[in-house]
Image (tube, rainbow, N blue to C red; front, top):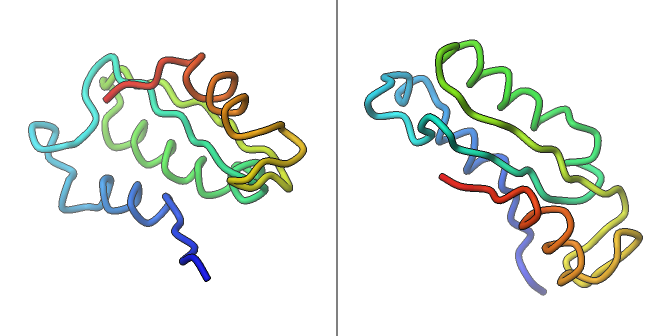
Length: 98
């Protein structure tokens, strides 16, 4: 059985209060963050928490957030199509950078 890893704790660690110093914050001006996932991402709850944290703590930081969740999707594919299509259409097309 493969472990189920969630990107949310990793992102949350990147925006924790300890990282609230602009010079040590992971995201920089011009960065684009793409949230990619299944129904948890599609509901935009946790992703919105992360986005809200960043834009309220660093209001002058020019960072773009894209929500590319697809309910019911899995790594092996699903309603959004196979993984290669999803990555190309729902992630790479937005040119995430950091």
